[in-house]
Length: 228
Image 1 (cartoon, helix red, strand yellow):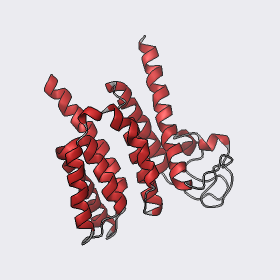
Image 2 (cartoon, rainbow, N blue to C red):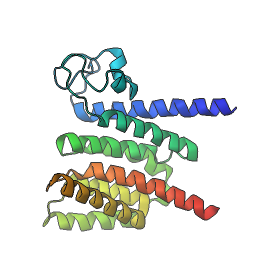
Image 3 (cartoon, rainbow, N blue to C red):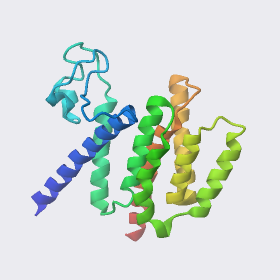
């Protein structure tokens, strides 16, 4: 029985890593998605062999470099896939997948914002299952307040509409307190980025994605601690 549980976690970890890899491809190619698309090196364009596209492992098989052009591959790929595997295992551990579709929406929006600086509104539809599953706990008034406030600030400050929409969805599902923690943590990540790289412009949704995941995890741990 114990071995079966470990095997189940392994399957979910692999599935989570594959989902992250898939979402990254969708975010990068949308709306020009081709079913015949082949993964290729970002530098020389060489079509990757089957073992190179294995999530996480493929990166280390080729020692983090393209076999052909020898350029260094981005370590963020296996790191994000590893994080995706852990996230899906966490949902399995707590036995609650009601937020899964929301995080799928948030992750693909984060990729899109990171690549291009904008988000396709159709991605928001991915959060609908989470909204339906948690319909009795949705914070409509909080979301409306957040949206109207940010729209007013948008007229004076350089806030992206995609940022406003994603923040509204976060407020809708998590409520005001968690929303504020998520927002503050995302801003903190931006400050670290600013002092480290001296960047003045930020694509905010990737930071929101990380901060939402962290606050969600901490909220669960605090709730569990209160039950003990």
